Each structure stands twice: as C-alpha cells, then as structure tokens.
Amino acid sequence: MSTFFYMLLAFVVGILVGWFIWGRLRGELDSLRGDLDRTRSERDRLRADSDRLKGELDACGRARADLESRLRDAPSGKAGTDKTAAPAAALMSTPAAATSAATKAAPAKPAAAKKTASAKPAAKSAAPKKVAAPAAKKAAAPQAATGKADNLRRLIGIGPVNERLLKGLGVTTYAQIAAWTADDVKRIEEVLNFDGRIAREKWIEQAKLLAAGNEAEFARQFPTAGTASNT
Image (cartoon, rainbow, N blue to C red; front, top):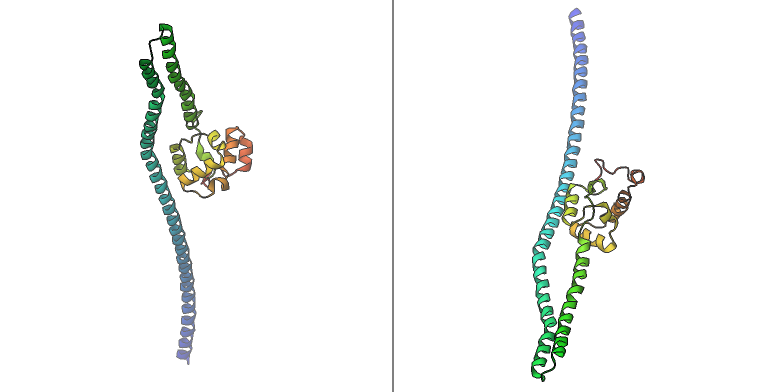
C-alpha cells in the first residue's frame, strides 16, 4: 500500500514538474517568435529604404548625366555664336566695300568731300559695336550669383545631393531661389528630375524668409528645418 502511495505521489510530482517546464519552454518559444517577427519587419523596412535610396541614386545619376551633356554642349553653342557673328561682320563691312567701289567708279571729288564720304562708313561700322557691348552685359548678368554663398541645406527638401546639383547650376544664395519664376521652377525640376517637389516643399517661401533675415518667422513656419528630417 505504501509503495503504491509513493508511486502515485511521484507521478503527480512528475506531472507538475513537466507542466512547469513546458510552460517555461512555451514562454521562451513565444518570445523567440516575437523576436523573429520583429526581425522580419526590420528586414522589410531596410529593404524599402534600400529601394528608396537606389531610386534616389538613379535620379542623381540621370541628373549628373544631363548636366554633363549640357556642359559638353556648351562649347558647341559658343562656336555657333561665333559662326553667326561672322556673317554679321561680313554684312557690316559690306556698306564700306560698296562705298569704296562707288568712289573708284565716280569722278574725282574735292579732298573735303572724300574725307566726309570715308568718315560716314566708319561711323556706321563703329555704331553696332557700342550697341553690342550692353547686350553682352545684359546676357551675362543673370548667370552671376550676387553675394556670399548661403547654406542651402537649411531649406526643407535640400540635402547634400540637391545642394551640390543646385550649386552646379549656379544657385548658391537664398535670394536666387526667392526670385525664381514659374519658368525657373520648371527648368530646375526638369534638371533635378523632380515633379512638383519645389512647390510642395515651399522652397521659394523658405528662401524669401531666410533672404529677408526673418529667422523667427522661418522657425515658426518651418520648425523641422535644419533637423534630421530635413530631407
């Protein structure tokens, strides 16, 4: 009878110990499953970030190729300007040649008349040079950036890559961005491969506040500017 009692007691104790061990193992198994799910979600997030960065890298590569093609085309544009300038110079010299031919064919005139006739073509040929100089200055003025270069990365939406691309286009100050027109925005977005991002992130509004030195209003309207979430 006592043997049966001890056997029954041992059986009950074994069941209790087994149930306790199974509960511990089951809790650890659930914890491992939770860690596995978190690892999978982290892996998916990293894959999404990798795809996004790869897309931005491709966009930067396309923008760089476009800029390089524009730089390669720049000398040819200059040569085309020289070619168009040559016929213009020929046309400008034509009246003088015609005048000299007419002078040879006409009878001899007094010395004073010859001086007057030779002075008129010279004045005509000199006049276009005076007009061409201001035109060249006007054409070159919009390309030059005025003032010291600003920290464009303070603007929301402009990171290291966009800042480097903008400087490659000659944009280095807040005042330049604040003065952009609709045509300027369209041209910049085509080069940087954007689609409405400049208006969506309010680059021009931010640049106007910074160009005016209104730091308080800039901080109030754009509190995330200059932080890790800037870009």
